[in-house]
Image (cartoon, rainbow, N blue to C red; front, side):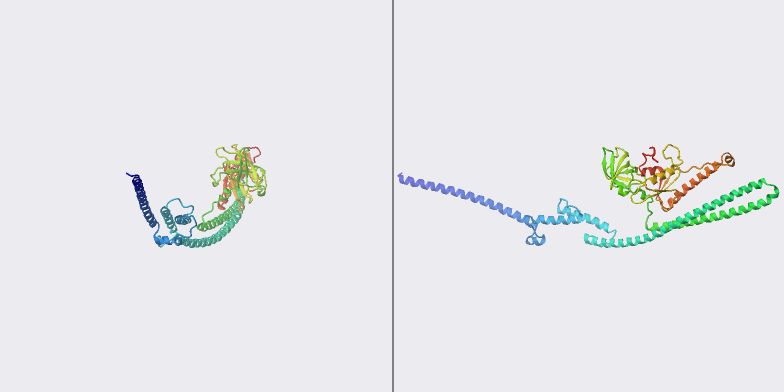
Length: 478
């Protein structure tokens, strides 16, 4: 083949190869483009379907009206969920739980149903399916206002009844004291007449017959006076019973409006609390000081914080004040247990000392002060001295001013001495009369305390309430 034709054939061959190659490349690109186009078409359809499920075309056009203003970078969905969580939080309180809107909605419905059930006990709910939280609150507010008005009216009635009750108490106490004095005077007259009667009877047995008639007349006269005195005493006791009945009726009227108060409540009031504990030094610091008139040597009982003090509550420890500052004081721990250590905010109390008032005590009965098994003749006097030393006042009898009554054991009355006993020891009559007097005072103190709603404590309980159980055997404790 000539050289010119060979070169032309090669060029055509190369052109044909290139054309075929380009065609193959074009076909490949077309195929890839077609596949991608179909994929984009499928994705677009899926996105459109998801978008239709999320919101229709009308809702999408009005997202700003339906949801609200959106900040940059925040999605409409997050904005709507935020508003929903905020509404849930305002209804249920606290932070909305991290759950679905459906679960939150069901939770709100359940709590709202409980609220409607509870509110239905106080207000009228026509249809639980149509009433909301705001109308319930509005109705409850109206009911609360009515209840407050009723309570205020009842408080006014209670104040009036309390005033009447106080007047009845004061009148009854005054009448009781007056009648008691009259009773004692009449009893003295009865004793005097009885003594004269006994003397006349003895004289009658010892004199001659010629004086018998005169002495019998005197005896009859004495008996008449004795009968008259007994009748007067009976009338006095009837007046006393009438006064007690009036007081009982006044109480009944008062208790209809208000339940009877706890007579022991003033005794259970704590005087302060622990503000600092120094375990190494065995010292605690309390929240009252010289401004509160606290004394060095004052003992207090310590009780667990957060628990109420009652008659049955036993103190966890006892402390004694040794250093006083303006607004606080330091006290050493005199008794306690490692199992129940003193903690910050623990309560402290002493029945005698009170930073706000002077407490008045009545002490009666027989006392074994140092627990040696023997009654101390001056036990009551020593307890009164302790009360006076710690800022209180002590009286032998119960009055309307008495705050607390401390009782010991019931006084033991010996057998009434006979004539033969008195011949051997005339002082036996004085011992007997003294024992009878102390027994009568003991009973009368408890009766008056019950009538006047005054707390009564036995000696051991009294020691618990003043933090003095560990001190009684110490020399000079009383």
